[in-house]
Length: 227
Image (cartoon, rainbow, N blue to C red):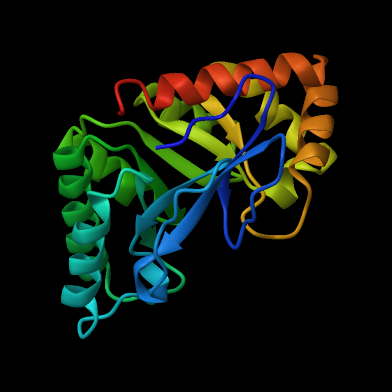
């Protein structure tokens, strides 16, 4: 897999990204899209089954796609995978598919990126049940500080929802999460990751350069031991 350079901005979760000098991006590929990873400087990939695009008829094909792509060295993470109580198939199918992807992540020693909407108890139960060996990153987080602390206490990392983190009301959440446990993302929304770094550095009363160094160290720790 490709790795960021010291001094890069890191966008931990994006869709439809292009390589941009000075920005290292994890591009999200979803199994239903029929897209494949490429070896492009400044990009690496996650690959998985999003619960929105899962049903009984597509399950076997989608899992096969994840198995095939998990061996690709340009795929750094499995997912986004997870639970959604608003949109998606039955929780039983979501749980089965999630557990299959956790197994794939373990086999290939790759972390996971998590989608979770109003299903935090389900996610925490799965973490307790499966005792994952690879770290989990919860993307798009905009919950309460106490929930963030609960996730972090289980060893998970958090990436903040791009829209929420730009608002003043995000400051208590930002300050509640240890800096060594979070990332920043654009989620394919067209917002500039540099603007997010500027806002968050102001909120935390640190320089952009210090925030970039922290994100670089977090990245290396999250992917520790990954070839």
